Length: 146
Image (cartoon, rainbow, N blue to C red):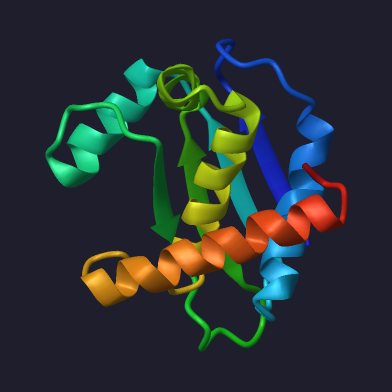
């Protein structure tokens, strides 16, 4: 799998080499076929612009997912793009007294789950999403990827 990673922010320093194995584990755990996925780490200004352009909401958000190829693709599957804002993770982490890196990874997992079909529009969807996020965070801890 080709995990294309771009870090266009300077708010949270982290080891970029740890991101691809996390992405690969999440997708493998979900038993998804994937040849390519893109991950972009951006600042609040960039994510606010994307949020406004695509969702008509200019406020900063934690992550945005752009699904591309569906499951029906049998040849090469680029499942999409996840855009994550570490600055939002830092702000939330300060309020909740938690690790901003772990919070950012939770946003990454959330975005990946959206790419593979999870939704969070209804209460039932949200419950399933939160359960999947918790399972993935636990799996990543167990595998010492966090």
